[in-house]
Length: 629
Image (cartoon, rainbow, N blue to C red; front, side, top):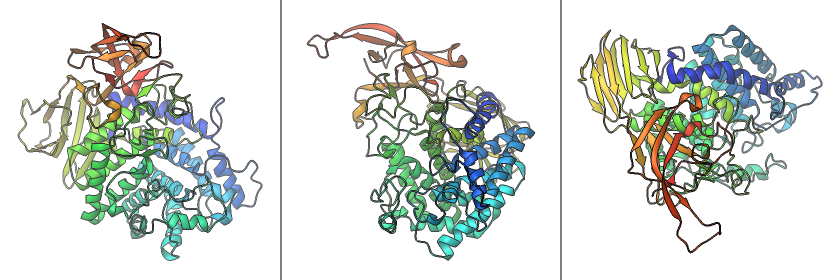
């Protein structure tokens, strides 16, 4: 299955509002951060790093040199990629000129042999390619390749694409021609090379991506040997944590999702894409096993993954704590990447279901309503005074910061939201697929043209007006136990399988999908220790949570009556979102730390808001899961 052209989706409604927020607020705000122009905000220095790298190559004084993480270049790349997708939807000459100037600066930072990385160009030229474990040279190149492809597709301008093709040729020479035995410490370039191959048709890009995937884990001790061969480190990594590095075994032998969660899903994305491109059934089966590992035993209700702060990692089956969870925003974005590529192997509604779950909950929660604050970590329970303070909870902040020293998530959210159409709509052979619902018009390469009208995710009817007919398939979400699908007012005639309804439609037809609008109580598996006796609520794709600001300041005393009536109401808070009222109880305990007296209970009405909106009204308590009364 191929992604549609990024120029072919024009968003309206809920998604359109978010994409306009990215264009009008997030992209300009993030550029100011990258330019170090905002007071009281974590310094970035990203653009100055590229300027100084260009000076270093010309033998000029580099002034303040390099500042930031070793992977700081990737922030600029993801910003440019977000700009590309935004320009495809909302042409903006001034923004395009700003991006072009940054691309000029990046081009000047490229060495004659194609090498491009500001950290090593400014600080340690002689150390290039000697620390693949920690150096992130390949990671940064991967993100810049993605930016180059997106910018070329959006604008037709190939300057950055030419820069990155030269960079990819340099990397090919190092690792294929010259036989460097390393493989990426942080997977990312693999998936980027496959995107570059799609655009250029250059077989070297496919060969290099396949090489990096095939060689990973063949020698699980490679990084240890590399560490022993040099006298310096970035973070004192010794290469012995094979699971964290995704190097414990060759990729086709991996069965469980382990290690750093972002690295994992970036790698799995490339594996799934390569399996589709090369008809590699063994690699496809591995991806299916890893999908099962994540979604059946290691994923949160919100689509968050990576349950531990230690290594930002997956741990073991059913270890899903709510208050110390990591669930990095980038990990859920990477999970969406993985799901989209899995759809490319086989059209299964379960992949679209997980993609939707991750987007509407964890990904959107990663950014405030203002577009100027961001979560790196996405807990399912927050208690001010403990969260962000206790040594075990310092990572789980009760409020979104403006920026981070390690700022991978903010520009990642921007590029994902701006590129929503690539995930909502795909095509395979002569059929157009509607994987997620969003108001607006979409033109497929195979000629199908649709106009979608919906208030989703708060409205549960999805209407498609067929501008140009053909073969289509509409995803039926797994959460919708009841639904109707009609074409021109009559029950749709067509096959329904694997979570999709297959139709053939004509110009002027109207498709109406009506989904289940009921509020539902969700019960966890008894295998999850942290959730014994708890329940949560959902409506459509949205997970809801309880904040103290709506519930007397205290959510710890609340109990949920799972079988009670639940009412969804449109309310003016949080931009006019739909809140849910549900019957519950509040317990009143003694002041003593422990007591022999049973807590008294009183009935009360609980108020829940969508999880993605939590933390937008000041610091307060929050819980997704409540004990069931």
